[in-house]
Image (cartoon, rainbow, N blue to C red; front, top):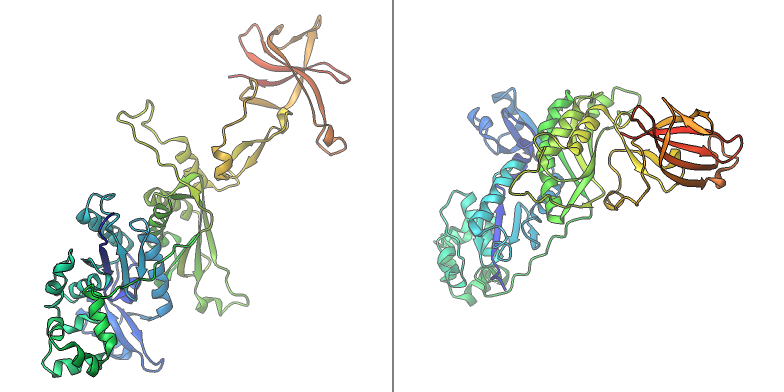
Length: 503
């Protein structure tokens, strides 16, 4: 059994990261909170700091320093939703995840072998987070609390080493300053006033005296970090469907500008689907429009729905982004968009394609599924569709037109064995002339296979445009070399008819 090892992922200034990840190039951005009459800057990016803006500054003063400042109200519910989305994404790396206030805890001891070791796993997670638009610091330890403290220290710009064994916990945590702990400010100030600056200073105090002065919960917190007490974590359970949203810092007028935040959502979806071993055949993006514009209308503007349908389950974000770009080229936003959401309700079992040593012959071009999906995204469901076999012996009723994405269970079932059928059926069977009881089409026909009797459809008697059939079908060839599908009508007035052509 693998030794438990916890990886802490801390996202410094998470509200600011959520605003910056929605735009490709951002100017000065500030996250504000406080009373509506006098909001204060809580977080600001480097562009805002270069203009002289700093946390604690009044919003009015900040706007005076940077006229192009984008001020966004802090919304704790948006931060919780983002961390939930990150938990879904991280499920591909570990089944034991705990969502914290500003990051995640992952138990990775059992996953390291799968991903080639601790360092490759951390590099892969860091690369994935950057693709999602996040900047994180990491801490790794044998206890979850110690891993979290190491990651917080690195977020503060401090040097720290990962305690990968229980014996190294005390030595790794002792040099960390007290501000690494998320204790209340009053307690920290009191400890500083007593001349205590590091975790090691606190650990050197008599336990009974410390507990009497500051309470047992703080002492228990240190014991959990050192592995002296158990530290069970509430484990995250991914939902049965995917739903995520990005709030746009500025109104988006052109649908093509939604591509950048959409790519972030697709990266998140890919991680979620990988964790579930699944793929998706239908993705629904929803652009919510500005309430300011809707207030001028008698009726509020309904959200713009942008759907993608695929012929087979897919989860690769790059491929999905290409299809979405084709789809967005046909979308016109009726009003500026302020949020972009992605929802996938149905998951399908994903079967990865095993790459062979030598590529198959004729693999130089795009396969037919990719071509069909690209055409569907560009032209729409009304112009690109597929045929599906129907359990009906009548050739003209043996298929139906369905959307490009059909149910995965239906798609994976092998087609039933059927007699020889032509690729092309004529829209209406054509009567054939006969010479001495022999049907003629470009010359006398030689019957090379058959008969195949089809008597079906009695249940449709009386239904408009439907009728029962009583026929004997043959494969025939004429003197020109054409191979035809013909039948002899058994019901009155009888006769021979042409119904299809073989390639």
